[in-house]
Image (cartoon, rainbow, N blue to C red; front, side, top):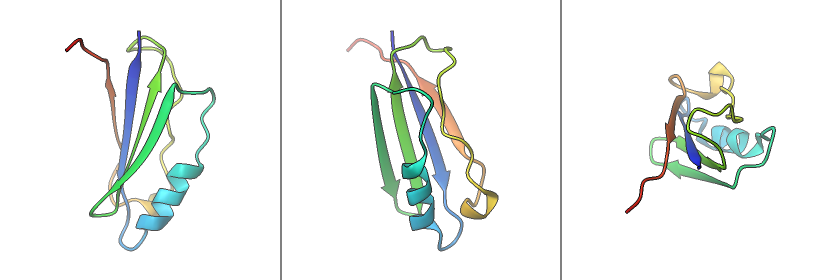
Length: 84
């Protein structure tokens, strides 16, 4: 069983590179199967981690950055794989 956690934030005006650096520097308690970091126009940062765990398992998540780094609350979602 596995679960993917998605963490997405939009940087405050002019803070896109700072938010990206902050997200990349965050260490998790535990080791995900995989971790990827993305950026998109509008200074958005997305981090996806995959865990060998049940959908509702207590797995480490990225924290919320300091308020001055973001322009809105962080969005978080969980997904589980489905057969093709």
